[in-house]
Length: 152
Image (cartoon, rainbow, N blue to C red; front, side, top):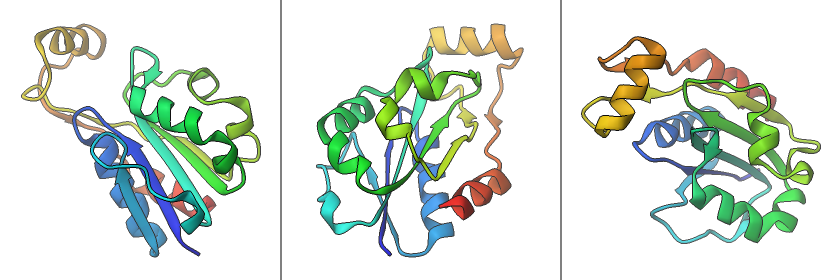
């Protein structure tokens, strides 16, 4: 059973998490929606879609891909994940169409990484104000990733 793990990332955390998910699943391929052309969804039985979330919204690459391929995505066994620090109760519902979330096998908020060297001044200020942090933060939880992958 081939699995496709699609992700959209700004600084790389969603890509790192996507690769960890793929490693847990075995026969899985990862695709960065920003840097690679869209794969042929017919070649995969399972689809996992993840994105970094910024100011409550997923990356535009993920949103565009989902909107363009919604019918095909809904025919597959699927999982969705979000990457970020401010976990919102309704983040999935705000960012994914209801038909995509219907019958989803796995759904998880998988935290992320904040690297002040990659962030702009405004982002550094926001993290410092909201999280009281100005240093590198890695909240990726390998056990949460394994639990998410096990549900698929």
